[in-house]
Image 1 (cartoon, rainbow, N blue to C red):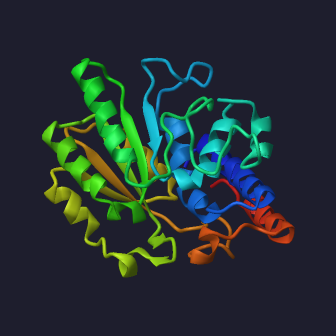
Image 2 (image 1 turned 180 degrees about the vertical axis):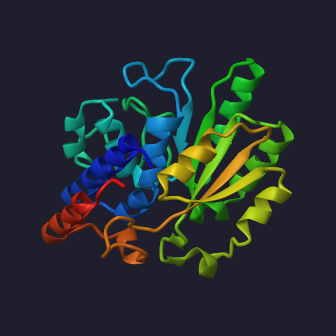
Length: 270
């Protein structure tokens, strides 16, 4: 773990809880499970300038699990991609920041997402375009494990391997909970690593909350598309939210919000 990534993850967790509570919005658990992944990407892995987020030489991050929009906005707002005051208007009438990730008028967001299964197709197209222009930028797609139920994901996985897209990395937020239950009860995904290997992908499996592990694997060179299976905990960082499907749709009351923020703030960098 690095101090920069820890600090960003901690601050963005607080903002995510505040935003979803104030807006009475869903998916706080989904945002918390992927927060460490985003923090590592934006502090230690990708090349992007918040002051010029559409520069041609930027790395691309596509968050396919667009329902976890609050976490994405919390990261971008904390890093000054846009005025952090926008966060207080999350999911309110007329806000720039809707309940699913939107690229319309929001600096730092590559594509509007939320209809699951679209992120990897977009990422494959972006990576293929970069490769054919003989450029060196990388594409990172972050998806939920539940959206691996979508056939478009596997069609795109075939295409990525066929074109040897060594500039493409898919990160799976493997928290094992989707919508109303567990992923394995809904539609069994395991053995997930062997599935991707059979499609011709490099596969790594890491603790999705261990910043050192995440950064190490995300910086490794690759010769084909890579999937990083990030084993995470839904609602991570807040004990009463962890591993609970309840927090897929529920938002925190003022009392729950304050308790959650206290717990987040009590965590220490180690």
